Length: 433
Ligand code: DLL
Image (cartoon, rainbow, N blue to C red; front, side, top):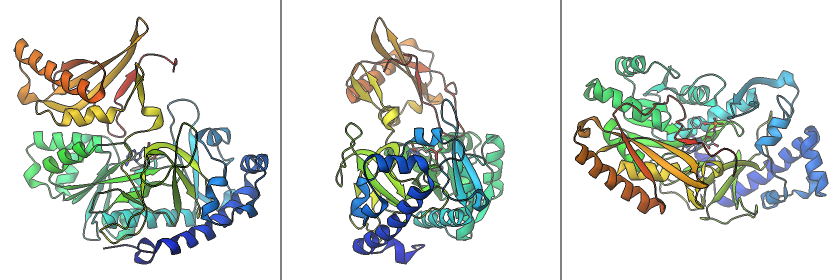
């Protein structure tokens, strides 16, 4: 089923026309209400009237997280405060929160794109949806909530925390859909297995996002939890979850591009990249009222596919984001993403997918230690067996990454579990890069 047939199957030409109309209006609104943006446009001699169609999008200046921080808390809001009905905020690792705002229409728009997403994954009003994304300033919980209510499903607003209680609620309430981060889904899977409850679960669909996860992780979760697992993407600056989502084909995430127009640029020189080329994802919000950010730099790495999908949707698809420009570790000049290690570990029977990367610098040389948690059934006291396994894992990781690593095997249940976004890297090198 398709939630909004007219929009989601619109011809590319019609979509471009709709985007052009909405972009013109958004540029005018932003230019007239946000001083910093007006200054940026004035500085390059660009007037709102110069933006005639979606083809002119790349003439506009970028917006960055720093712009939002500088405008903290309300400086990027385009409407009078009495029209704002909600704010969310995302906690950066340092400094001030990034505040985002919504009018009533923005909340309706968000529910609509979330309803499209839920429908793509096969969720209907007959489902019972257990929402374990955090409720609060994080957009995950409330974003999911409004979308599942919009499709008419029973929504169970559990939020994060107390994994034992989550297990009981999943079981007793007969949840058919689970929404949480993929790392938490894996943790819940482990707990359900340990409790011997898997056969009694009614789960059939998972809608997982808020952090990168690999195809290998999808297969593991699908097999062990007996569900169909879909990727959902979003960021608070654009709206929250529901910017894009995977349909049943699981071959890219359909972007709600009548509201959020994607582009890909080369992060090295900001040049626009073509279809299929991988680079930094940029979004322009062309219909939002409170905070229609234009050309927002997400720092996420992806590529775009404009071909019609086998599901019937014509909307542009973005490939599963595999990391952020800032997540990329540079170890002795080699670029590494934590997701590469996740892929390797999921192919090793004895290893669990829980790991931690410890990056350091010793005698001016970068070092990387991969702490790998073993599965209980393979954990042994026999030193030789452990050493053989350690050598095998080291070789596999080294051949994937192309650099030497130190692997440490740790006992089952010792790597920290996360209820929200997982932290997989401890970088002790300081801020030299
Ligand atoms: O994480 C919104 C969200 C909630 C998305 C629930 C999906 C599900 P922020 O906290 O602002 O918003 O973080 C946004 O998280 O720029 C990406 O780096 C990352 N991210 C979100 N979804 C995915 C995904 C929410 N499916 C940042 N794959 C984004 C990879 C993702 N990374």
